[in-house]
Image (tube, rainbow over all chains, first blue to last red; front, side):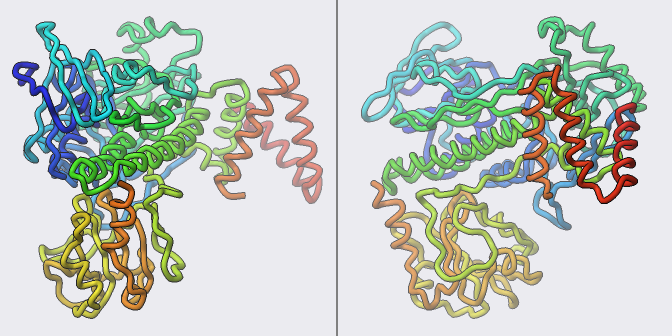
Amino acid sequence: MNTAASLPSKVPVLIAGGGPVGLSLAALLAHHGIPCLVLEADASWCEGSRAICLSRRSLEILGWVGADGPVTAKGLPWVGGRSYFRGAEVLHFEMPSEPAERFAPMVNIQQYYIEQFAHAAAVRAGGVDVRWSTRVSAVRPQASGVDVDCQSENGRTHRIHADWLVACDGGRSTVREQLGLLLEGMQYEGRYVIVDIEQDTRRPVERLAWFDPPSNPGSTILMHRQPDRVWRVDYQVADHEDPAEAVKPENVLPRVQAHLDMIGETAPWKPLWISIYNAKCLTLPRYRYGRVLFAGDAAHLVPIFGVRGLNSGLDDAGNLAWKLALVQQGHAGDTLLDGYSSERVLAARENIAFGAKSTEFMAPPHHGFALLRAAALRLALVAPGVRSLINPRQTSPVEYVNSPLNQPDQGAFTGGARAGMPAPEARLRTSQGAGHLTALYGSEFVALYFSNNPRLPDHVQRAAEGSAVAALRLVRVSAHGEPDLRTVVDELGQAWQRYDAAEGTLYLIRPDGYVMGRWREAASARMDIDRVLERTLKDLR
Amino acid sequence: MNSAELELTYTALAECVARVGEAKASLLLATLALDLLSRQPDADSALSHILQAERLANT
């Protein structure tokens, strides 16, 4: 492993923190042609499973750098879950899922695997230098970049000048502290112990929750399966319990044993990792401070319930990488990065709002919520209408409402995805066989042109030849015919339907798979993609 | 009522219970229950809700 030996004195992008967000961002930046240096205080990938639920959207992002394959090969896919009150099932939920989908709605995998696969993707992409056991110790913002001091294992201090510093250094971010920035928001008192155990099981992969189970009266228990015969068990500890005592094996193991006994998991087991957690709803007000940017837990801390932590961090990385690349390469003005901040702060606030709702149910913050939960769980036994209150509100991609990049709709759409929304998925036929529309996203801008006529109008043809402003790829979505390098065939009609397309409809998709603009009749609208990109990217300079 | 409205209602009642405090929570909930029960079509319907709530409270 490389440590601080022979560190460069100048880099285009320095990433503080080599966790899952930092390593993924490094791979994404490299994919866009930007070399970067990653400094990580720890000696290697993390210990303990930590974040274990990757969303479909996160898998798409990892797919942009080819890290999706190893994750899905190792991980356990799942689509739903069950909640129990005492002995009775009170909720069975399923997330949106369809046959032959590209990714399951959720995949469980230990965080250290995610870090390993993101790291491998970064190395494959080239230009990424990861240094372990090297911690950032001082940050001094300058007009044209950032001076960063870091300390290697032997205590030596190195000075590095970076054009851009991205803080991915987690909840206790050194960069945030160095800039004197404070997270805003609130924390909840209720604590959950997190335990990984190794045990064989035949149970299907689902999110399982028990409220007030006979095994642990008064507590709430969550269980998720992970690869390598591992169970994640989370349980709520009583308010009066001392956190330091609560994580001692002599207090943890009997509770786990009682619960395994209750659910009939009788195979021998052993504990692997124990931690403790309380829900936090915190964010920086902005994620850009001059040449310093924040992503992941360094930028925001959201409650564990609904798995919005790492998943929102990966969305930060996916949103930032292409913008930082365009700015660093001189193709866009640096205000594009203010758009990163506004879009992802909006996302964090939405994640916090949903996370707070989930926390109010999973760890009731006061007597009012405790009483209402007791009522809702009982009523759920007989009244299906209230069961939605128990739903864990799993993460989903956030709409970037009012983003400066959003182009107003041209022409009347009655459905589809408007600017600022994630571009919908569709199964279709490509020149490489059966495929998915989202697999086209993640590199350049994509102009999706819905037409059954292989002859493109002149101005659409010009887009097909690329843009002078930023990398652009034109893809024709045909309802029938044969696919080729520039044509996909929407035999099932999913793409035309989900994009509310008519003959001649054009969608401009951002490199992060979000809709930037759409033209109902591009052929007659004389729209000019180059000018749209020029206006939204270059003129910002 | 859709699930978003139900959630809003749930949160509003939880916060309201917390505001009046534990000592007055029973009075608050009894007032609310009587108000809603008085809008039931008939006594049979109201009584079935009362009995169901009693059964669930003893669960």
